[in-house]
Image (tube, rainbow, N blue to C red; front, top):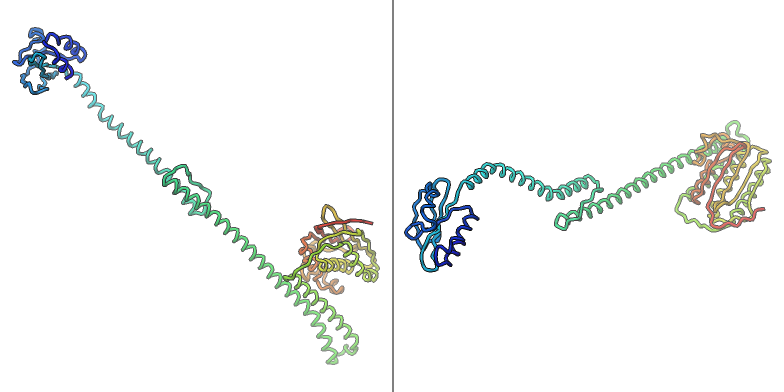
Length: 434
């Protein structure tokens, strides 16, 4: 069509020869020109007889038609394009094209078409799988995290790199996981604390039951003795004629009961909620005062005392409680040491800690009894303790007082006897040893 437009600008056919020849070479097609009567005027008919002998066709065209198609004959096809020269003469440009190459290309395309369709199908499946993975991967991840959360595992975290609805959902799941994890940890801590408190309360209740059971047993024995003495004297039982002797025995029993009741009241008060008054005092002076209270016992049993106590050693304690603890320790040391033995007392301060040691010689505690010495009414040697008039609460009270002052304490056997020690943190120390 472009060639036809160029030819309309010429005055005669001879001017078009160069353009037609060049176009024929470029397109590898045969060209000729016919007039309105169907007679070939370019090139001449003699030169075209050979090339067109195999083509059987009839030409009809109208000047008003811009394109005339002919049915192909053999392996060529011919198209006619009417045009009018500048001088007004009408012609038709015939173009004959070889269809062999087109047919061969068509056959090749038809032969590879199934493979192309298969490749396109497989490529479509691959693209669909990749796209599905891209779309569903965050959903699968969210599903996995939510399943872990359902099993109370909050260690997983969702990726929050996306900014769409899935990214928002991932952020919400992370926030929910953190909140649930914190709440679960708090609940576990509270449950553990509650369990500890319940176990502690059960232990305290057991200790109370054991304590009052032991106290009842301790009171039952002197009451039975006292009742026997009184019944014997009132009924004139043989052997109870000397009322004064049995009245003295009964009085001793009452004294023991009174001492035991006082101990019980003291323990009850110590385990109560009364307010303790701590103040800084000269701890060494407490030792000296309590040593003076057991001087008569030492002289009675002809025991020697060796004390190494500084002049001043200040510490913050509850004075009445600490005096009671030191008194019980000294009395125990005096009672349970044989006559003529030695009692050593030392008091010192090192690096802000007061340490005291009280050793009574000539006696030894069975190793299996040492862990139980601070239990209420426990006696390592029952017969000996009964004779000394002990209530079985002395060391129990000492242990309670030491725990109240957050002190470390203990009893151990030495080469010479039994050693009681305790370590007490102090606020201020002024040590002028002599």
